[in-house]
Length: 262
Length: 329
Ligand SMILES: Cc1cc2nc3c(=O)[nH]c(=O)nc-3n(C[C@H](O)[C@H](O)[C@H](O)COP(=O)(O)OP(=O)(O)OC[C@H]3O[C@@H](n4cnc5c(N)ncnc54)[C@H](O)[C@@H]3O)c2cc1C
Image 1 (cartoon, each protein chain N blue to C red):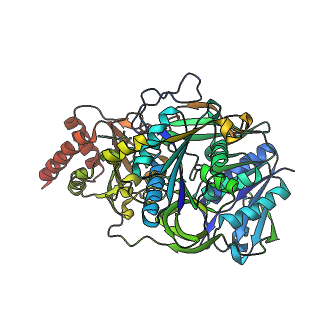
Image 2 (cartoon, each protein chain N blue to C red):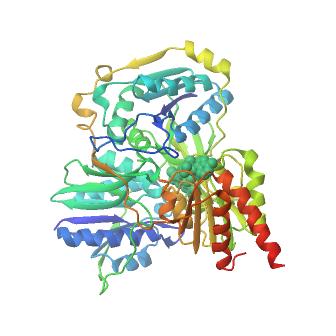
């Protein structure tokens, strides 16, 4: 099995205070911690597990600046064999469609049986790149995949539906699967693994290497153009309880008690 | 007259709520842009569904085919590509659901139709479509415009618009269209639905829930959370990362891909309040959230908020509950 995993280097924002930068079109990235996109982490783990079971290769691909190499190093340390970084200032502002075009330009030249990526990226939340890429490659796909069982020439996959249940599909290979979190348990990377990964080569390609035109990528090549970001208006504001933890606990108990719940 | 297409979603003989949410929003857009609202349904034996759709839309296009008994994005793509090419709607609306995220991007790419996903609002500005969507787990909203085109496509977030039947009902005209599918789709086949294994606890009937999220940090902290729940006489529920890590079983997950709950008390500890979670718990009677991030989206759904490290609150809270219970007896 030759597997390609598409990964994205994204800022962790769940616990960070976000500031919109002066352009109003993006967030201020200073001080944010970047790591592999949560969903892609599961895709990578799944790829490595399949390789361990069936043999073959895993190639990790990302689009991003120099800093995103740390995410590729993580992939290599986890068991990816090769890594490719696509980078060009012209890629800036690419939406899911332009992103898929960039990935397609490289992937179409490679051999693969399977392409895995996360169901969505935690920053943009588009959940669209995978299926668009599958259409460009003209291979079948499944999104929100929770389980993959490989047969000969086909795969049985479970897709997540709403309300906790799933549907099972049979899909012909080569195929693309956009995976959900929880499909596996991503492993920790050993120090040895990281050291070894430092020596592996990362292939770097720019716009010129992709054969795409400037107008195919970035804002010019996108379907969607962000005009402005803003802090969501508050619909309902919680009444905030203040004081020492003990004082707060006392107030909470009073509230709960007043509803007859203690 | 220009058309606006809404794709009806159904599963196992039931039309899904999202369909009427989309039709309600689409009607508003159709009125503003002087377009005809058109509900599109693909399936096997969908005439009853078509009648329900006709109460909302001027035109109902029903494609009947036994091969369409279960959703298959490849089959849908082929049929919708044809319908869209023939009718050239100004806008195609789908739900940002499991079906929508599987189908819409691929369909948009096949037709080269600009797409915006997971929209929480949309409006025509002249002949350009502008949308609102969220980024960074709901911490930031983005206003974006789609590249100018004759047809736009969007997926819309669930439970964003409240369904409302037009008065009087639209009394739409139902057209049954022969299926253009000539053969089975061989590269992608539906096999079966897979139900989760029956669980031990039913969080949907619990009166009090302690919901825990990634903020509890470590599995070693689980006993502390269980303890608090027990003291309060509550059941432990959770956000998705807790299930993904295997710290609690599947049936404890609250949210769009988990359970919808409506307890008398929902105490959210270390949960950011991502939309998918909120969808499952926002109708709880009393919501109390503890989160150290004052900007956490959960605070705009909670009745009471505590901005503090949960590990400072939980032990005190447990003590105070015990004291109160002791006074009572
Ligand atoms: C298709 C799809 C379906 C999904 N379905 C669901 C679903 O059904 N249910 C669900 O929950 N999610 C679902 N999700 C995931 C969802 O988008 C979020 O990723 C998830 O809800 C985040 O969980 P969380 O709030 O526990 O974690 P995070 O977003 O990581 O938030 C952790 C919070 O804890 C706070 N915190 C950290 N430490 C402390 C401390 N010591 N004291 C107090 N607060 C602290 C942080 O400030 C932060 O706000 C789904 C996602 C997708 C794409």
